[in-house]
Length: 267
Image (tube, rainbow, N blue to C red; front, side, top):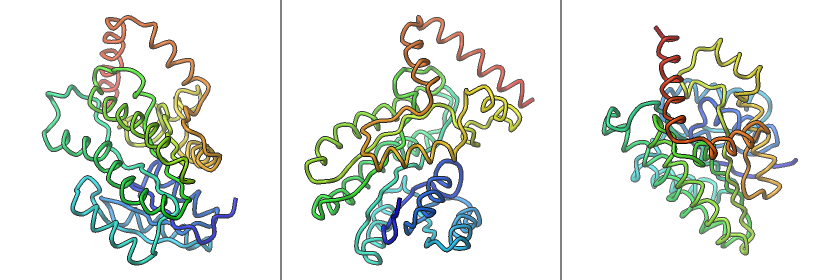
């Protein structure tokens, strides 16, 4: 795959899945804009790793949950590069907590990141892609979008919106040569879930979790094959079907057990 000269924006690219997607795209020759809203050092690590291997990259600090700042970032990219060939909406946050226990700021940020920001970036960059008759968009949803999960009700609901929007937006854009791919991964071995490292390694070994690099590679390959939707991992397909058969009372009991186990592990 040769992406030399292709300009790419990856949101939330300083760590986790976003970092691996940025590194993978750069490995194919793309010029990568590493968006971040946290440690500048982490973002620079990604940029330095890319440039050390002969790639092209720059970091761009922006809280994409902020509408005005997102618009400024969009204008800056268009002014400098003139276009965007690949958009990866990856930025997100995760909280395993009841909605009423979440701070209002966390609720607002999650709604913005998973819904408003995705639509905004698709709207602005999608318009230009449509005019040029080509472009790729990768939206990171979640396996939780398929089922109402107590304990992550807000997270799952926003990911459900993202999945639904992405599928419909894809149909609007296909006739103009723009492909929109939705990825619905299960648990990924990152710090997103605040799970101890040894439990992450165990989960990867038994197939419950997937490594970020593996997900990044599969997601990118699926995007360039113009896949509509992906649920990486065979186990995840069976797990979704299994969940639909479970009574809600059993789901509630399972979530409580998982949360208690995580809290005990932290203590």
